[in-house]
Image 1 (cartoon, rainbow, N blue to C red):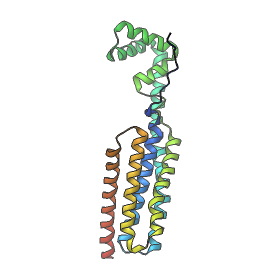
Image 2 (cartoon, one colour; image 1 turned 30 degrees about the horizontal axis):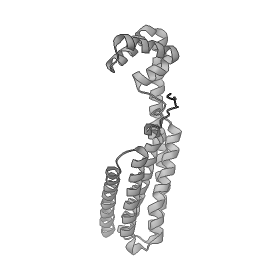
Image 3 (cartoon, rainbow, N blue to C red; image 1 turned 60 degrees about the horizontal axis):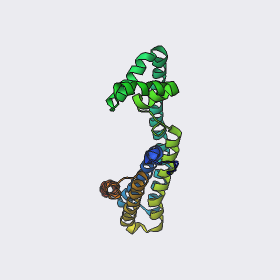
Image 4 (tube, rainbow, N blue to C red; image 1 turned 90 degrees about the vertical axis):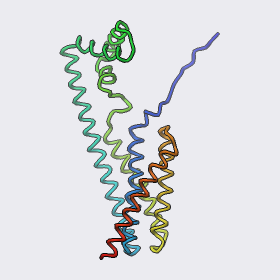
Length: 233
């Protein structure tokens, strides 16, 4: 005799909201702070000036990430709220047309017309707005905008990411700072890329190469500009 067991699944899409903000924040923290430190060091500035620039970059960057994420995700949330309000009004004013529209979506997904109408009827009887939000507008629990979560996550992970090259700069003399901070930051980026890929279920090597390549390019360009400006000044 077979026994029915509870079958629960944990999908990685549930992490998309905080994971995107976390990876973006940490990556930007490492790249921007390391590039700033390397660029100032390449100009010939003293060790104290390099650390001040790096510390200022950390604070400014964390605040900028928090504000930027909050504003952008709030705009997304406003758009979602406006679409839901419009859908709510349409459901109240013309439920038949909304039912036909929902059934048409299910037909396009492969259901027969009769089954699509039945599914639309039952889902709308249970939660009409939820059904239309999910299947017509593409708004779900996992993808809905959360401005405060995105802002706090980005600021915190930026700070952690930026602290890594800044602490490295504190521990090495100015004469070897460019090489050591660059190498250490590329290592930090590689680890971040691997961890982000693991958390999101993506390919590790591709993600690792992607973040280290762009990080190396950013530091190389900034170091070149710093050296050129230092020579000119």
